[in-house]
Image 1 (cartoon, rainbow, N blue to C red):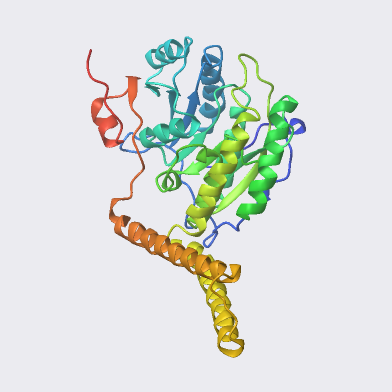
Image 2: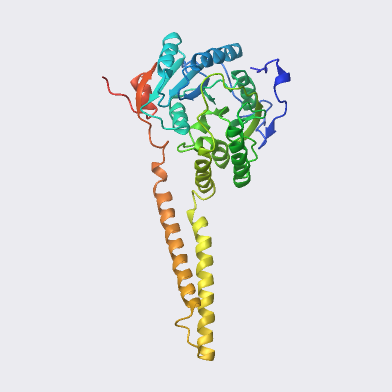
Length: 371
């Protein structure tokens, strides 16, 4: 099937950034997608939308998604996650579930954050392709066709780029600082890591683990696993209802998670490579200082017992040995836990709508006890 973008091209940036070349070995590509109905009744497309206090946006979001996806001729489902809302978000979600069997909804017991919301959605999504988008109507569902077209070209993850953001300065400035830092540290040349509008092949969502603020680093995590990543400029609308939940406050958390991602992507399998090099350097410098002091003692007979350099040499050797010890412990933990790696801690749910206990159990989610 050929996906055709909206005719409103004058509102949409035209360029597309490619990070890695797509696979295209046989015309359509060995990894090309095959949209359409499946005999087992499983939808081709899953749209995951976490929400917190979006009572006024959820119904319009559903209507916009249905209007954009129906013409594509693919089977689809909408997975809504209420991440601890205190307004009527869950009530509206239940109304949508009652109206359309393609909509399912899950409610966290409290606010766990966007990463855990996406992890819950990934666990329950059944589609070959998973679209993630915010529930505040700032992402335009009409762009889904263009995301699918890029996946058809052989990409595994396509990340949106809000080239012309419709947000206040207090939200855009932290994002610019964060994006520039992540781009430099990770080596993944995306313009917009913060954009929640993304398209994944299901195999990508099954091979990355999300917690903390790691939802912003899914392109980095996917790239580290060998998946092909691309970026697509998308339209961005001003928020119609409610207020943003983000700002400068999450910048610090993002930088801390950047350190985590750097370790996970570069040293996860070989922690000794990160700790062993500084450990070896410390031991080498400490030993050289010790040899120099020893030679000075033997040649000149000078007293070295109270020299600060001797204390420095001993300290460097001890620190180096500790680095080596921690690195070896990390190696043991990594290789000893390979058989036990999973999707991470399941998020407890308060309620579900449109889902059976069997599907929840297969997804590894807590089944709410009957009241």
